[in-house]
Length: 173
Image (cartoon, rainbow, N blue to C red; front, side, top):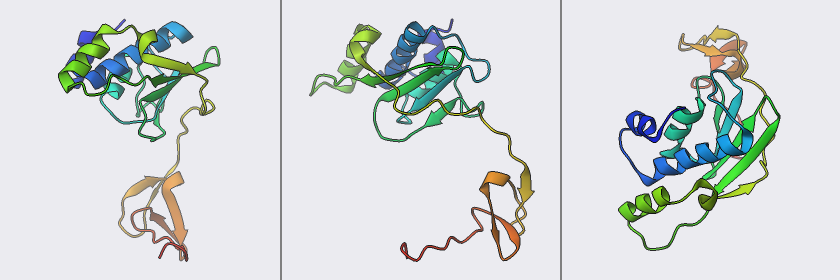
């Protein structure tokens, strides 16, 4: 199993945010009986893109490239974890920290807590996403760059990437 030092080495420094992701990972491992995900057995939907994400990648093997790290940006320190083998899931929401503490004090505070003291355990509000799909690729007939089929639009009989395609919306002018 990976360690705190592995997370620090990957992230580049120790901080409160990394601690949050590390302890969320440990708690998810405990609650869902998770192991490191070499494919998509474990899924994490993060509601932020802060430092803790690096610890989740290291500890659980969730990554954008594998398709098992997804972002549902809400600006919350909340993480939903899914175990594809068992179908179980959990949403961990960070409890408020004491007000008025410095960054350094925040790091020490989070380091001193057990995961169950840090997070409220809730039901995952998003259903387990399907496994990542593979898409055919097409060449944009405007810029010549290749894009996946899901990101190609037809306009004037031409296949265009999202950068070259001009949206039509009479309400957002």
